[in-house]
Image (cartoon, rainbow, N blue to C red; front, side):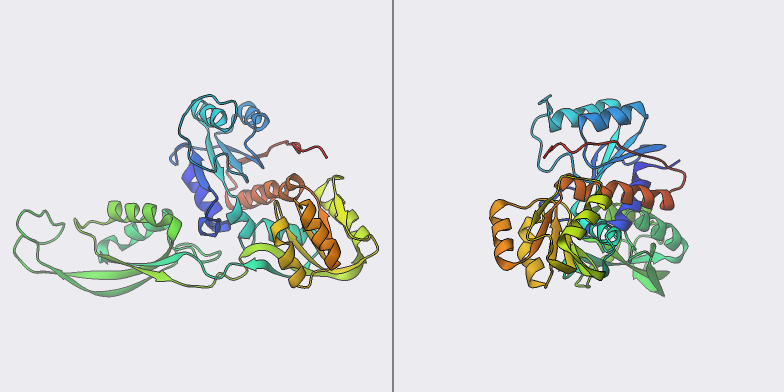
Length: 365
């Protein structure tokens, strides 16, 4: 039987939590990681309507793109809003996972997914992630327990490199220690020097998973005192970052591309800045509230920038610069996250019953 933790581990492989913005709130937000899950409902938002669907479908888990809670909650009272929804999830025994800006920035995440839907080629991040928050864990384990320790720390979030899991390295050696009086060593006796065949086990750990990985290490390791080292890494994170920019296979016009966006995203609530006949081939995009990245799109040489929210003054600047802009709405540009997550989890966890929530844009433009 799958648990919330199993599903979260699969999601973290697609959208590593370390890619989330500092202000964001991702991962398990409500519920118990040990809870068994047969059915998961995937939605853009944890709204009243979505919770009603979860109840009707007996879904033990709700997976959303937008977090239900962004900042700390000081009172668990029915406020008619976010706290009320969180309390309802607790009462009904349903867990909630969120994958937000970590999914936006992931190499195979939401922005890449939308770029592919729109037919962009030679795609790269609009705002690349320069380095990943990654640590190297080195721990010394008796040969008899290496497999158990490796399995435990990897299940807690260690050892993920791209699409490869349980990535570790082991080198044999001899560990020495002299237990002092009052200790209860797994091996050896107090006062005597002990020599033990050990494996130096190395792996990578996302900073966000460090606490759970160290807890798993302490639980699975046989020694009373576990010797380990942590090293900060500055590895590049290829193809990770917010937004995307790429080329269309053939030149088109802003008006024709607007029609493509309308068909692909399934919305007629679009606004265009610029002339419909403006030539377009190099396209930048950022799902959701990406108006602040308009300058980056222009400096990257985009003919057109697609996003979900553009402010009045940003539209004026774009028009002055001759950059065509499509505002397709926050909901329409991020709703594809539901299909992305559903298809991914279906491939990774075929035993999981996955339901896609029915949702409507709360902003009727």
